[in-house]
Length: 237
Image (tube, rainbow, N blue to C red; front, side):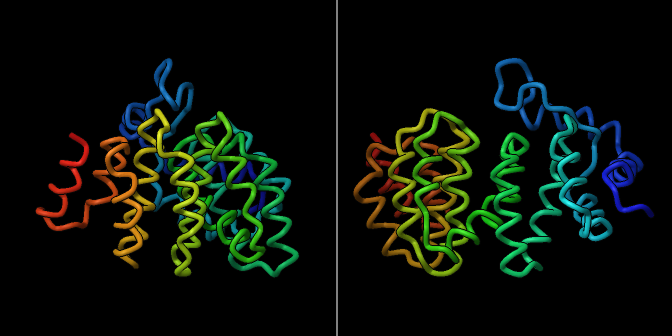
Protein backbone atom coordinates (compact mmCIF):
# COMPACT_ATOMS: atom_id res chain seq x y z
CA UNK A 1 0.00 0.00 0.00
CA UNK A 2 1.30 3.41 -0.94
CA UNK A 3 2.13 5.62 2.04
CA UNK A 4 0.23 8.77 1.15
CA UNK A 5 -2.84 10.71 2.23
CA UNK A 6 -4.94 9.44 -0.67
CA UNK A 7 -4.39 5.83 0.40
CA UNK A 8 -5.18 6.67 4.02
CA UNK A 9 -8.41 8.39 3.01
CA UNK A 10 -9.35 5.46 0.81
CA UNK A 11 -8.79 3.07 3.73
CA UNK A 12 -11.20 5.05 5.89
CA UNK A 13 -13.78 5.38 3.14
CA UNK A 14 -13.84 1.59 2.87
CA UNK A 15 -14.87 1.48 6.55
CA UNK A 16 -17.55 4.15 6.24
CA UNK A 17 -20.95 3.35 7.74
CA UNK A 18 -23.93 5.39 6.43
CA UNK A 19 -25.88 4.99 9.68
CA UNK A 20 -22.99 6.35 11.75
CA UNK A 21 -22.45 9.08 9.16
CA UNK A 22 -26.03 10.17 9.78
CA UNK A 23 -25.70 9.99 13.58
CA UNK A 24 -22.32 11.67 14.14
CA UNK A 25 -23.37 15.15 12.94
CA UNK A 26 -26.07 15.23 15.63
CA UNK A 27 -23.67 13.92 18.27
CA UNK A 28 -20.97 16.45 17.40
CA UNK A 29 -23.40 19.38 17.03
CA UNK A 30 -22.78 20.33 13.41
CA UNK A 31 -25.98 22.31 12.86
CA UNK A 32 -26.07 26.01 12.09
CA UNK A 33 -24.91 28.02 15.08
CA UNK A 34 -23.66 24.93 16.93
CA UNK A 35 -20.03 24.45 17.95
CA UNK A 36 -19.31 21.92 15.17
CA UNK A 37 -21.16 23.79 12.45
CA UNK A 38 -20.41 22.48 8.98
CA UNK A 39 -18.31 19.48 10.03
CA UNK A 40 -18.65 16.46 7.72
CA UNK A 41 -18.58 12.77 8.71
CA UNK A 42 -18.38 9.52 6.76
CA UNK A 43 -19.14 7.24 9.71
CA UNK A 44 -15.87 5.64 10.87
CA UNK A 45 -15.38 4.80 14.54
CA UNK A 46 -12.39 5.80 16.67
CA UNK A 47 -11.19 2.17 17.12
CA UNK A 48 -11.24 1.75 13.34
CA UNK A 49 -9.27 4.95 12.92
CA UNK A 50 -6.73 3.87 15.53
CA UNK A 51 -6.22 0.61 13.66
CA UNK A 52 -5.63 2.59 10.47
CA UNK A 53 -3.04 4.74 12.28
CA UNK A 54 -0.82 1.68 12.68
CA UNK A 55 -0.74 1.25 8.91
CA UNK A 56 0.05 4.91 8.18
CA UNK A 57 2.09 5.84 11.25
CA UNK A 58 5.11 6.80 9.13
CA UNK A 59 3.14 9.09 6.85
CA UNK A 60 5.26 12.16 5.94
CA UNK A 61 4.09 15.44 7.41
CA UNK A 62 3.39 16.77 3.93
CA UNK A 63 0.81 13.98 3.56
CA UNK A 64 -0.50 14.35 7.13
CA UNK A 65 -1.17 17.98 6.23
CA UNK A 66 -3.56 16.85 3.51
CA UNK A 67 -5.53 14.91 6.12
CA UNK A 68 -5.63 17.87 8.51
CA UNK A 69 -6.77 20.26 5.80
CA UNK A 70 -9.66 18.01 4.75
CA UNK A 71 -13.28 18.84 5.52
CA UNK A 72 -14.02 15.25 6.62
CA UNK A 73 -13.76 14.90 10.37
CA UNK A 74 -12.43 11.35 10.42
CA UNK A 75 -9.58 12.29 8.08
CA UNK A 76 -8.52 15.08 10.44
CA UNK A 77 -8.72 12.74 13.42
CA UNK A 78 -6.57 10.20 11.59
CA UNK A 79 -3.99 12.89 10.86
CA UNK A 80 -3.90 14.00 14.50
CA UNK A 81 -3.56 10.45 15.81
CA UNK A 82 -0.70 9.87 13.39
CA UNK A 83 0.99 12.97 14.83
CA UNK A 84 0.44 11.63 18.35
CA UNK A 85 2.07 8.34 17.43
CA UNK A 86 4.99 10.04 15.70
CA UNK A 87 5.50 12.27 18.74
CA UNK A 88 5.40 9.35 21.17
CA UNK A 89 7.97 7.34 19.19
CA UNK A 90 10.11 10.24 17.99
CA UNK A 91 13.36 11.60 19.38
CA UNK A 92 13.68 15.16 20.66
CA UNK A 93 14.23 16.59 17.19
CA UNK A 94 11.18 14.83 15.79
CA UNK A 95 9.06 15.85 18.76
CA UNK A 96 9.93 19.53 18.36
CA UNK A 97 9.03 19.31 14.68
CA UNK A 98 5.70 17.64 15.50
CA UNK A 99 4.80 20.31 18.08
CA UNK A 100 5.53 23.13 15.63
CA UNK A 101 3.50 21.35 12.97
CA UNK A 102 0.63 20.78 15.40
CA UNK A 103 0.53 24.44 16.44
CA UNK A 104 0.64 25.51 12.80
CA UNK A 105 -2.40 23.34 12.03
CA UNK A 106 -4.74 24.09 14.92
CA UNK A 107 -7.44 24.95 12.39
CA UNK A 108 -7.84 21.16 12.10
CA UNK A 109 -8.37 20.73 15.86
CA UNK A 110 -11.90 22.06 15.76
CA UNK A 111 -14.09 19.72 17.75
CA UNK A 112 -13.87 18.38 21.28
CA UNK A 113 -12.77 14.88 20.32
CA UNK A 114 -9.99 16.27 18.13
CA UNK A 115 -8.75 18.35 21.05
CA UNK A 116 -9.02 15.50 23.53
CA UNK A 117 -7.17 13.09 21.23
CA UNK A 118 -4.14 15.33 20.74
CA UNK A 119 -3.71 18.22 23.20
CA UNK A 120 -2.43 16.18 26.15
CA UNK A 121 -0.36 13.79 24.08
CA UNK A 122 1.45 16.41 21.99
CA UNK A 123 1.26 19.89 23.51
CA UNK A 124 0.93 18.80 27.13
CA UNK A 125 3.85 16.38 26.89
CA UNK A 126 6.00 19.00 25.16
CA UNK A 127 5.24 21.74 27.67
CA UNK A 128 5.90 19.46 30.63
CA UNK A 129 9.32 18.65 29.18
CA UNK A 130 10.19 22.28 28.41
CA UNK A 131 8.61 23.79 31.56
CA UNK A 132 7.54 26.72 29.38
CA UNK A 133 3.77 27.01 29.73
CA UNK A 134 2.88 30.60 28.82
CA UNK A 135 1.13 29.32 25.68
CA UNK A 136 -1.51 27.77 27.95
CA UNK A 137 -2.34 31.18 29.40
CA UNK A 138 -2.45 32.70 25.93
CA UNK A 139 -4.81 30.02 24.70
CA UNK A 140 -6.99 30.20 27.83
CA UNK A 141 -7.34 33.97 27.44
CA UNK A 142 -8.09 33.74 23.72
CA UNK A 143 -11.58 34.00 22.25
CA UNK A 144 -11.21 30.68 20.45
CA UNK A 145 -13.25 27.87 22.04
CA UNK A 146 -10.93 25.13 20.83
CA UNK A 147 -7.74 26.87 21.95
CA UNK A 148 -9.36 27.34 25.34
CA UNK A 149 -10.22 23.64 25.54
CA UNK A 150 -6.70 22.77 24.38
CA UNK A 151 -5.31 24.89 27.23
CA UNK A 152 -7.08 22.93 29.96
CA UNK A 153 -6.87 19.47 28.34
CA UNK A 154 -3.13 19.85 27.72
CA UNK A 155 -2.66 20.06 31.49
CA UNK A 156 -3.85 16.47 31.77
CA UNK A 157 -0.30 15.42 30.97
CA UNK A 158 0.93 17.42 33.97
CA UNK A 159 -1.68 15.76 36.17
CA UNK A 160 -0.46 12.35 35.06
CA UNK A 161 3.01 13.32 36.27
CA UNK A 162 1.68 14.43 39.65
CA UNK A 163 1.90 18.16 38.88
CA UNK A 164 -1.35 20.07 39.44
CA UNK A 165 -0.51 23.78 39.49
CA UNK A 166 -0.98 24.28 35.74
CA UNK A 167 -4.43 22.69 35.82
CA UNK A 168 -5.58 24.76 38.77
CA UNK A 169 -4.24 27.98 37.23
CA UNK A 170 -5.92 27.42 33.86
CA UNK A 171 -9.11 26.29 35.62
CA UNK A 172 -9.24 29.63 37.43
CA UNK A 173 -8.87 31.51 34.14
CA UNK A 174 -11.73 29.52 32.61
CA UNK A 175 -13.90 29.45 35.73
CA UNK A 176 -16.57 31.79 34.36
CA UNK A 177 -16.48 30.65 30.74
CA UNK A 178 -19.95 30.62 29.15
CA UNK A 179 -19.70 27.37 27.15
CA UNK A 180 -20.53 23.94 28.56
CA UNK A 181 -17.71 22.31 26.58
CA UNK A 182 -15.29 24.26 28.73
CA UNK A 183 -17.31 23.57 31.89
CA UNK A 184 -17.07 19.84 31.18
CA UNK A 185 -13.36 19.97 30.35
CA UNK A 186 -12.43 21.96 33.45
CA UNK A 187 -14.59 19.77 35.69
CA UNK A 188 -13.04 16.65 34.16
CA UNK A 189 -9.49 17.91 34.80
CA UNK A 190 -10.34 18.87 38.38
CA UNK A 191 -11.72 15.37 38.88
CA UNK A 192 -8.47 13.94 37.49
CA UNK A 193 -6.56 16.01 40.06
CA UNK A 194 -8.84 14.68 42.78
CA UNK A 195 -8.32 11.11 41.65
CA UNK A 196 -4.67 11.58 42.61
CA UNK A 197 -4.86 14.13 45.41
CA UNK A 198 -8.31 14.72 46.85
CA UNK A 199 -7.11 17.40 49.28
CA UNK A 200 -5.80 19.59 46.46
CA UNK A 201 -9.03 19.30 44.51
CA UNK A 202 -11.16 20.06 47.55
CA UNK A 203 -9.03 23.09 48.44
CA UNK A 204 -9.84 24.46 44.97
CA UNK A 205 -13.51 23.57 45.29
CA UNK A 206 -13.90 25.16 48.72
CA UNK A 207 -12.62 28.39 47.20
CA UNK A 208 -14.59 28.31 43.96
CA UNK A 209 -17.55 25.89 44.16
CA UNK A 210 -20.09 28.61 44.96
CA UNK A 211 -19.36 30.45 41.70
CA UNK A 212 -18.51 27.54 39.40
CA UNK A 213 -20.97 26.64 36.63
CA UNK A 214 -23.11 23.72 37.81
CA UNK A 215 -21.91 21.41 35.03
CA UNK A 216 -18.28 22.11 35.89
CA UNK A 217 -18.94 21.36 39.55
CA UNK A 218 -20.89 18.18 38.79
CA UNK A 219 -18.05 16.86 36.65
CA UNK A 220 -15.49 17.77 39.32
CA UNK A 221 -17.29 15.94 42.16
CA UNK A 222 -18.51 12.94 40.15
CA UNK A 223 -16.38 10.47 42.19
CA UNK A 224 -17.33 11.91 45.59
CA UNK A 225 -19.64 10.09 47.98
CA UNK A 226 -23.30 11.22 47.93
CA UNK A 227 -23.09 13.28 51.12
CA UNK A 228 -20.02 15.20 49.95
CA UNK A 229 -21.58 15.76 46.54
CA UNK A 230 -24.68 17.19 48.18
CA UNK A 231 -22.60 19.49 50.38
CA UNK A 232 -20.79 20.97 47.39
CA UNK A 233 -23.92 21.26 45.26
CA UNK A 234 -25.67 23.04 48.15
CA UNK A 235 -22.94 25.68 47.98
CA UNK A 236 -24.40 26.63 44.59
CA UNK A 237 -27.83 27.49 46.06
